[in-house]
Amino acid sequence: MILVTGANGNLGSATLGALRARGAAVTGASRTPGDGKRRLDFDDRAGLGLTGVSTLVLVSAGYAEDDQVVGRHAAVLDAAVRDGVAHVVYTSLTTAGDHLGFALAHRATERLVRACGLPWTILRNGLYAELFGGLLAWAGDGLESPFGDGALAAVARADLADAAAGVAAAPAGHAGRVYDLVGTPITAGQVAERLGVPHRVVGLGAYRRRLLEETPGLLPFQPPMLASIATAVRHGFLDGTSPDLTDLLGRPARDPLAAAVAAASAARPAAGRPEGDLHRRTGGAGQGTKVPGR
Image (tube, rainbow, N blue to C red; front, side, top):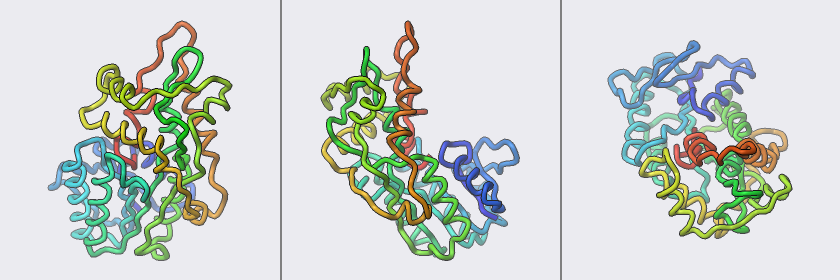
């Protein structure tokens, strides 16, 4: 049986759905399970149980400081070894993301995965196109962002879920492989153009101040993570491409610009209503600050 962690999160639930669509024997796990899912709380080491699981899809348990994230991942990997899991698939961060403020937890977890003694596959996921669109702020008649003219090789979340499902359904052929799952580079200007509105660039200092002083709901570790995405995109560190995604999918990838446009459009405030806050627009600040994965 395949088990997908973080099954209540965006990536975990999409991966679970993709595996079910393939007819795979799969279940989801979460600290707050429902709908037939298993309870799996990474902070409850004594309660971690993976008996009967053949392939573990370990979706990053982010939304915490690095020491907590790595500790959670270490706990579930220890349980996987103890309970006889045959293969671990870990959803990590794109190789180009080494510059980002949440990279360390992923790279540290990759070390743990490689050292655990089980067959493994590492999926280095690019940043979600949905996150990119959600990070664009509506201001008056247009969009504002700190991204400048920089491009992001964004990926539609559904494609990352489909790729993970394909690997988990037949893991033997992917043992010991690291895949860099990035998409077609897109810019904030292209999103604005598709929506027929202007795009205005804000400085990184102003963006950081907004995160720290004007954005309710963010946890202390999240503003620097978001700021790191902004400067990495702006200065061209996240626009590299790779064929790995389409090779795994066996088809063309979904259009990341369309996904980003849809996310930005959904966040557009209704007439007479104030702009929604960043935390809500990105679903808890999304992949970047829950730490990709979820």
